[in-house]
Image (cartoon, rainbow, N blue to C red; front, side):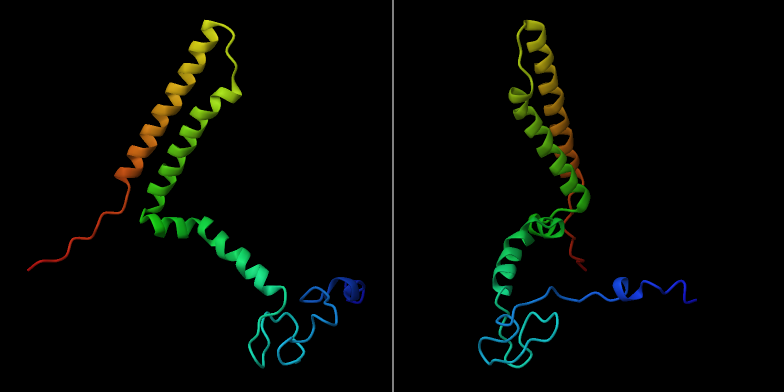
Length: 142
């Protein structure tokens, strides 16, 4: 058993929070030392120094979370995925100018065929999104 536990001092214990300076270890408002890993002072409730920037950065990123987009638009999961696929197809259609360069009429026709296929894919995805959206629940009428 002792052979298995020979590296425990280096691998077993890791500090729960990054090392802090002495100035960051005490609350600015009341002077109380922060508990390990605490984001707020346990005495007065003041946020730690670096926490204001972290919380403001998290505020705008929450709008990019899938479930927040889904709730904001009022779409089902399948409908939102179909909408995103349609948007990607339209972006591909617009990006074909930068991806392909046409030198002959045959190449121009091929690029137009790519655009038509992407637009048809977008139409199909948008129609699927419309058909898969949440239906408003009908109220039970006596």
